[in-house]
View 1 (cartoon, helix red, strand yellow):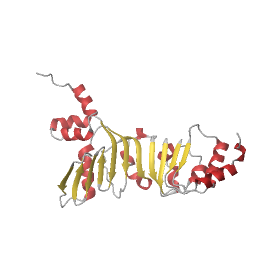
View 2 (tube, rainbow, N blue to C red; view 1 turned 60 degrees about the horizontal axis):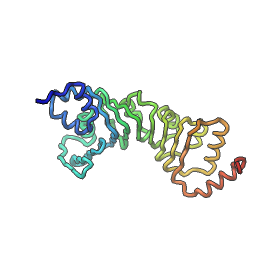
View 3 (tube, rainbow, N blue to C red; view 1 turned 120 degrees about the vertical axis):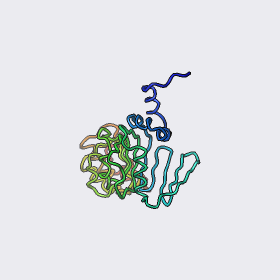
View 4 (cartoon, rainbow, N blue to C red; view 1 turned 135 degrees about the horizontal axis):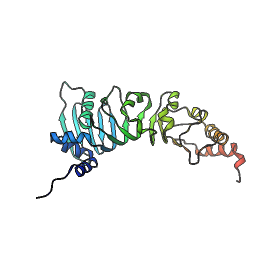
Length: 252
């Protein structure tokens, strides 16, 4: 007869088990549920929207019913109780999956379309990367373990120039602006400390890169610092501007 698995070995298996399989197994055993909550759970990607939840390869969409997909073309559907609102359904689902756990490690947390508080108070995440709209970051900031900062990567859209001064943004190793950015001059003026910055949708004035380079020449910049600009259609015009304004580097 095989020897029963001891707690240390059992703990190791649970911690690194596929999170949805782990939740599925633990939900069927009351004693296991108690142990399960004390063991850290590791999630590669957790995406939360108003009516949508994605946990690694498993997604749940709530409209007039509840639709679940496991990422392998298997889809399930359940009727949404009449008295249950869509937003409350997502909150309840999150609480069922991850509430009251001692430690939740998430590599990438994405929160978009958050029009009302969704995250339970006992829902604390330790993350590496964050994707969100900066205008409502304070709604869920208390749910992020302070040890997560500085973030390795922040992907965000901003609505107000003052957001550029937020400690979470200024301390991140890499920042990707996806929308709403018209403040590169402010980034230059405050001598931004992010090592890697990307503007995905930003139509900038050709003078801005010149000002940026001049600023770095004057104040110095850590080796390896990069600013990337996408969605600029006139690359020839930009290069011509740089060559004209930075003649001192010609033939060097």
